Image (cartoon, rainbow over all chains, first blue to last red; front, side):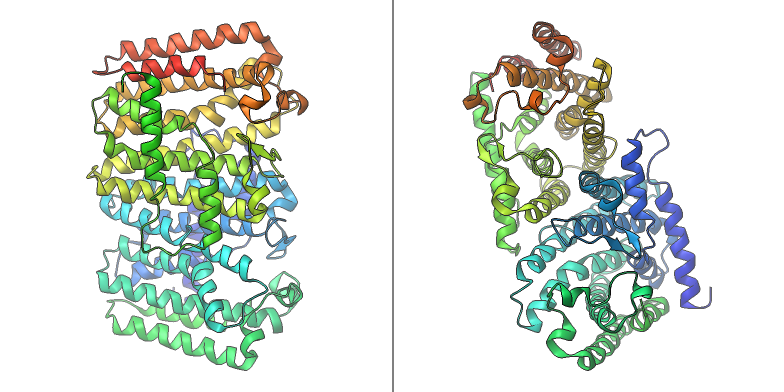
Length: 298
Length: 298
């Protein structure tokens, strides 16, 4: 595993192995529900949040195998948020990553319930599987508390509401940043901090991971907006300019493409600087991921 | 607090006090989201699950004040399930308990997100507020594990899927019982067991609480079906015979009203017997609640 691409591919597969065994063997889940949950869990996600969690643990020389269940749980929360986001009452998207969205395949009711089930079960995984890895109960409770904060009404769901309510009325970069902070940043930060918690990070290190997360999260989102404008439909798996057609206010819309590209670079450098200054014993993967995300084309 | 009605009213208000302060003061929640969450949290629920949790703790002479946050969390999960259940893609209900449903007031997107937020935040309350009550971390993790099991894909959400998928094809009492076990029974059992966990129940006592819960949960559901047939529209706050109009297969439909009434009595007696045999130090409220639920008219 020399290159960052190898690292990402390797741990992407490890996370998928984890996601394939989220249900204890003796559990009886309605077949169509399990199918619907799996459909979206294995719909070609980049596993960015799990990878970040693993890299955070590695930065502290923590045990990766202890992190994997929590990485799977974070991916389940991310997946539920996409399934609900795509619903007709929300963004009404037919495709995601080139595949039909969950409700287009399983119907709206099942998509709502599969999302609910993914969210609920993520807390099962964290409480049950992390205990099986001998993580201290207090640490697991810290993770659950943060998970429910960053993913909840003050975090991701709150960001989603602000995004929905503000769609036509956003006029400032500050407003937009605020939305992205919660809608995408919070769960990224949560992933990094969970990796830190499991690997025994200090309060200062947790803060550095959070600061790193918000910066690369915002860079990621602006990069997404840029790709949406200049991107190639096939690569992205969704119609280009979908945001502009939907009259969604984005970074390129507010400050132009060139300033966006600069902003992505600036945020990435700042993010790396935070990690460098926090004296992690083994920070390289985190730094490489920051660069990797900036350079992605889809 | 001599009578069971006084007990229920008193602790119903205590739970509402708890529900009024679910957000830490420094939290910034989007206003409409908080409004939508509160709308359904305070829409006249009977607080049955919290009351059962409190009665379970009382049966073990546990501290009620330690139970209250978990009782609030259970009510939040119950409330989220109703909000999502009522959605147009699900049961498409305009009214619940005589009030407009959440999506009729706040729109579908907000109802989905308010449900997501209630579910997520319930885990915050359990992890954070129970720690503040000095409940041991291991006990809290046990509660979280059970909460996510009973409310998740194997529990309540699974029951919801089975109900939805089976609506036209149910032919046996066993199938119907299976659906009710998960759709309503699991969360009732979870409430009782959580009260038990907090009050230091033994494994045998937890099992008795679960058995009691499934029995009164089923009795409650059959009673609901009976009231739906014979009930009075005004008392119930929803159109009578809505199940029959919707062609939903119910207990009265399968075995007739008289057999239903007998079944409710039988289950209630069995439930009480389980508690009596388990030698709880202070079981009276649990026994009274079983009788109370059987006699309710709405």
